[in-house]
Image 1 (cartoon, helix red, strand yellow):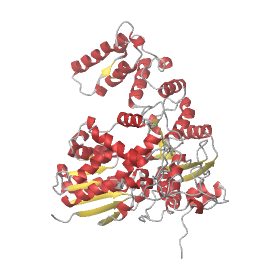
Image 2 (cartoon, one colour):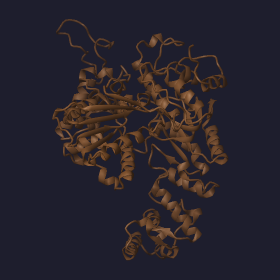
Image 3 (cartoon, one colour):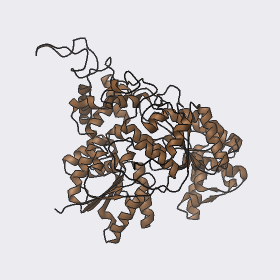
Image 4 (spheres, one colour):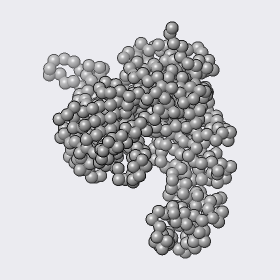
Amino acid sequence: MTQTRVTRLFGGPGCGKTTALLDRVDEMLDSGVRVEDILIVSYTRAAAAEVRERLAERLDCSPRSLKGNVCTMHAKAYELLNLSRNDVVGESDKQEFCEEYGLDYEDEYDSSRRRSSRSTTIGNKIIATSQWLQRTSRDVAQWHAVPFQWDVETVRLPPEIDPNAQTGNKYTPTWPSDDDRIDVPQTIRAWRGYKGENDLVGFADMLERVQQRSLVPSVDYLVIDEFQDITTLQYAVYEEWKPHMDQALIAGDDDQVVYAWQGADPTLLLEEGGENVVLDTSYRLPSRILNVVNREIDHVAERQEKDFQPRTDGGRVEAVSNPSMYDLMRNVRATIEESDGSVMVLFRARYQMFQFMDEFIDQGIPFRTMTDQRMWTDRLADYIRAVEALDDETPLTGLQARRLAEMLDSAAFGTGSRDEMFTAIEDRQDARDVDDLTDLEIEPSFIKEYAPFAPTRSSAADMAHKVTNYQKRSMGAYFGGPYQDVDRARVRIGTIHSAKGREADHVFVATDLTEKVVEQMVATVEDPTAVPTVEEFTKHTDPVPVLTDNERRVFYVGMSRARKRLVLLENLVDGAPTLPIDVLLNDRPSDHTLEELIAEAQEPPVTAK
């Protein structure tokens, strides 16, 4: 077995890391390597889909044809293990186990229950701890190392720190007989036993099996993007695969780790050997914004220095203290009205995003949500365009006509039916010999024949069915407002995590945290009583006096999305722990005004002579 050549490709925000990675793949292909002999792994499905589409464009082929060679590590494990969908743990399985075990559990995908700023439900917390132990290759006995804080009234802590633990001789039980608190290790083992009894595997289980069984993809070249976000378990799989490869190319940025809470460890990238390639120019960040984000991330002790150059001089950074959601809405609205640039509004948590959407949605400005897919979806946009075309008596595409058939209330079809309209569209498609519905032209009279009571703009929201309340409100405001010419891609709203790999001209970042995030920070601080300016750092401390490296990397990702203007929002979300901007930029509280802090941060760092 030959020695595998390893190349580490480092790239900061906007440095074209994925482009450089694909350029390297092109070089492999130009040298005679077949695409079937290359496996490109990305951390998330969305990132893998983007790489797949970009590579397909270069190769002039269908992205679908590359699905087996460009995917997540879990997807490749799923394939190697020959699993089916029914083999994989779902939300209903977690719910069933928790109900049997008497634990509260919150369905992650239940749209009727939005996560709040409070700590995670106990059932979710224990299952997440089990996964974290697997991802970080720890034994169940090490459960208390997870970056959570546990309520001693609810769970039994390790005996050496639990105030209710009994001491005595070897015959003395650890816990009093009336102690009915949750035994976390016992519950984790029960959860794993439940999976085994029901022949179910989770994502971490897949990787463990691949590594334990030495299952290796049938390729000679391994490319891993976003390597900074891999866990110890994923690294073990990489170590299993690497000796079987002629070459391994790993790309990442240790400053942009956003999945530390899932077990991501940037030291795995920093300590991996091989040739180093560092990209030296950001094609996104202007100088003033680059200076600010560099100041923020420079407080991380262990990192790869990159020293990359800005896209251009200039840019603008602003800071706003104690704004309301209404103030933020007005700021975003003014940005849309006064410029042609794109806008991104970022929050640390989904519940904070929903609070802003409650305020913003009635403005009628179309937007995309990067986190929740039930808002301005492509399906909703097609319906809206179809209504506009009908109202203007202009042709529709076949896809827009189909959206009407799917989404119109049954009253719109009069004495006819929805199925009749579906059949008529399919017959028209066959008659015109058109494969893609977007290439099929449908005249308004055709729609009126099958849906005689199809709505105009004013009734479009009321006549739509199977839409969320948010979507209905959005349509009503959109058709009643002055922003119908605004492209919905101009405004994107989401969490910082969902913004990874994206950019916008104007980026608003709320610095508010959540109790769960602060709880994780407290759990990683060596001595909570030694944190400056507070007697003891707890999950209830507000404002937050310190920022851990993991959280600093998350905010670095959010701030570095900005191409022209960055707006930091301090103490925006009512009831959320506040991260002061001086702690964000200078790693400590200060008496400086926001204007002084931002003015200083935008200037180049002073170098020692």
